[in-house]
Length: 123
Image 1 (tube, rainbow, N blue to C red):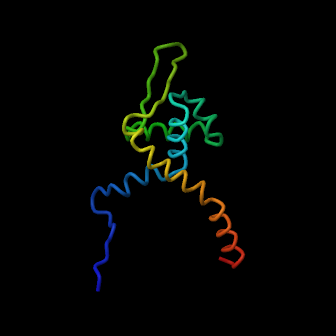
Image 2 (cartoon, rainbow, N blue to C red):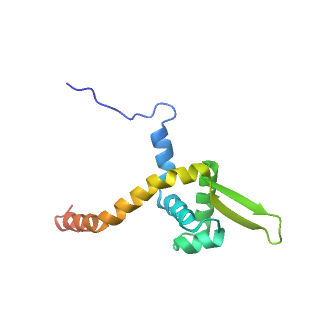
Image 3 (cartoon, rainbow, N blue to C red):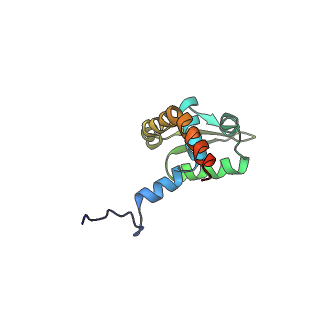
């Protein structure tokens, strides 16, 4: 009998911890928008993503900043100007995310078709 590889949560699990942060659509879309456009202001990120609420974007940006994936720079102006950029860690993550995005684009029609077939069968 083969030994089962497990992914039990025992203390800090890097897989669970990181994927839980990056696994939501807003984090991925925010990182992809920053990579595609470079330095961006809050309103530009929101416009680039489209259907994200102001509150959800604020929460997402704070989480990505906390994880060291983006940098927030506040300019002492009235009103204050805030700009966001990817950090070195954020940039190093992008090739991996780009592969995931490419995979999603290349397989999206196949997935949609599979979902339709599943639902037709009563799944």
